[in-house]
Length: 75
Picture (tube, rainbow, N blue to C red):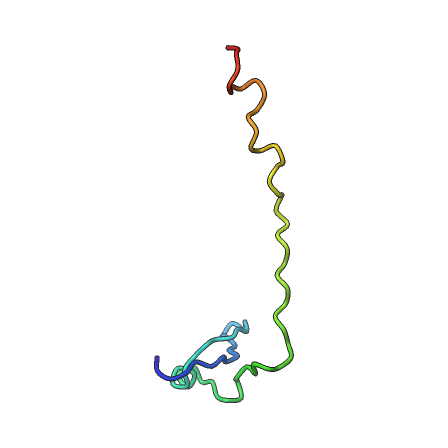
């Protein structure tokens, strides 16, 4: 790649839309022009990340389970 990279809005043949960072030469290979440029100061901000809904770690996960060994007597 040569030259600075710019962000171009690209629609795949299947219809999904994405943003690609391309040089001017690569953009022309994909059939993109200055009309497809994504404006950096467009006012649209990135959305906040979706919080992870996975279960958090258990509070007693680090403790040794009762009756299963450990430092103590017993069989």
